[in-house]
Length: 424
Ligand SMILES: [Zn+2]
Image (tube, rainbow, N blue to C red; front, side, top):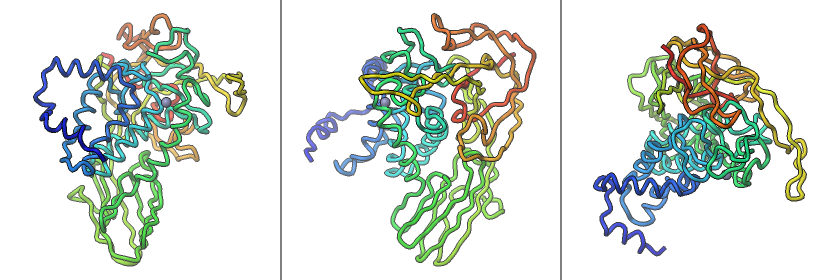
């Protein structure tokens, strides 16, 4: 490989910490014109190239991620963007391709660096953004998902996106451009492949997914309903000795290993030939995650929780470029049927564990939910649309008594409100 372009940059002594604020602003303006999917793919560039180029790893992905998050971050650790970056409004969309490419970047960065922060952000994308933008049967997907998404209906021709058409957030085979149709299916398989990794004689459980690892002389079966509850049971059958590392998320509290309290969260086990079982258990606490514009998202572990909005599903069959889009590969619009204009009345929460169904991210059967005390407010629609919420509420003044609302995981709620204010 010709290393010259990289060497030139290195010889110029580029150091992000020494650049001026005006340069940072200029570079951000330049980033705004760059396609969001290219940016999410690019995050892994140093991790996958530095060894090849004989260069030190400097974690430049973190610096890039910080800029993107500051100006375009979402509650699920992704970025807004329909092609170009779109700011901090929770009703601006995030392209499906950007979600799966950002997931893959974080899988690669974690594989190269072993730095837990990347796999924790990966979980946020995989357990929230990815399931939310796919229909439960996976026949349809959105081009762009919204964090606060009160409807998936055709908008006016002048759609509220930078570049997309009026159907971009409806569910379909190809609701906008075809890239997401080709791309969305990489999300789950690559995520599953990242559940276990290895380094020499060490096997690492990176993400606690229900899975089976069959490696050379080792079988590990992990039974779990994570991230909906935090109990893991490992069944190990080894024909050779190896070291087994289990990554414990930073939010985990009251960690127990085989029923006993663990003093350290750095779990490494020397596994001998034969059968071994390991049980892991921990707890997670719901909390308000601060978002821009005085809004808050409710998070517990790696799950965001949203007010689910019930909807009527309206089928849309049509022919485009000579190709029939008929059932089951038709499109759907979701028309809201229940209120969405809420704010939090306090921070008292009740966690409800339900039985997990064949479709874990189901709006009809959420495996876990949180009851919260909420009040309705005059939120209003974004002018001139009738199916897009305002970026922030028109008024924070309550217009209802306190009512208990059951919030669902973001990934279960295809229509939802996620970023909401705290009401006095
Ligand atoms: Zn796409």
